[in-house]
Length: 454
Image 1 (cartoon, rainbow, N blue to C red):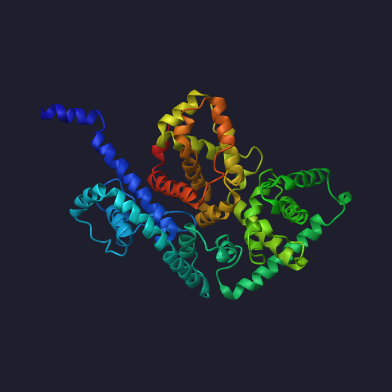
Image 2: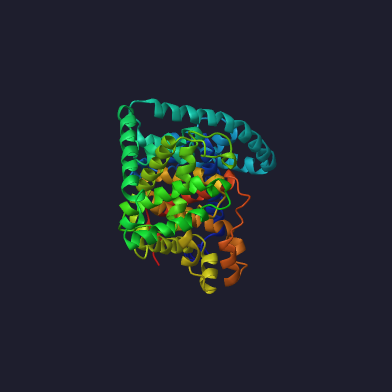
């Protein structure tokens, strides 16, 4: 009897173990969502597929730009995190045998706890927003900004009025030393003006045929940029986009201008304009702004775009090999995470390049409401040099939001669905869910690439 049981246990996965893993994953997802609302820093999450505490020495995960720390003292177990979130301020360092009983008790009063969670979330968000602003203020007010700490804070979202300064710092455009910052920005803005005068403000007779064609393509694409936001339809805004894009393309001949880069300028333009304009973007106009202010904004956009694309140069060179490589990784990751939808897409003959190429090319700007883009880009920029690889996890999470729907569609239905995703009513909650799953999967798989091998 015992030997039969043992042999069968090796042959198939115990359903109870699978349910336990699924339960822990779902609980961790809820925990990360809470963290993304400002309760803590994503870098302090402890993820484990077991109920025991991981050894700190084996749970360090590094990226080229900064280190995410997984601290037992800061995070505790998933059970501890659950208790701290539902019960307010509690000691999360104590993990004992009572956690199982607590889980059972919690499950029997699920509805009551859910109602309390909604109430506590509404009340707690305001408090943590204030706490997060205080943390940002502290980090930004010192003579030397510690970029690792700023990245950890920014990953979960940046207060809008702090976003211009934070983005400049995260991208390395503004130096972390406050004594040098003003002088560096002044010099870089003057350098941009010189480039515009040298490359853009010249007659076509001084341009090559390729440069004329590139300028014409940019002039065609600018009116198509974020067409559902009236602000970008203003002639002066499109002229600013044209100057930024053409100047960037001339100074980066390896790629030149590639369609899609025009979308990447828009978050920077909106963020840096927010230092001068108030209210909703729908009411913005730059017609009354001085040329000096506009040139400073353009310069900041130009340099930040340059810094961003420096980390993904092969995304926009000939044949865009960087994007093709990431699309392949996306396919492998989806196959590992959600085999049924992966198999269905393959059976129907749907190629990932048919829909995911645009996602990587425009970084999802065309797929979600524009008012959510800057929040998404807080996380992008916080990732630093690790961004290209992390995009794979974000896009997998984004795609699998509609796993059930996709499995009901044939090839043509999936193509149409993925070209017009139902995100028009999305709020920050849906976006944070996507980022939460991406963070969890990145923590699970990124250090174990063999899991993704065919």
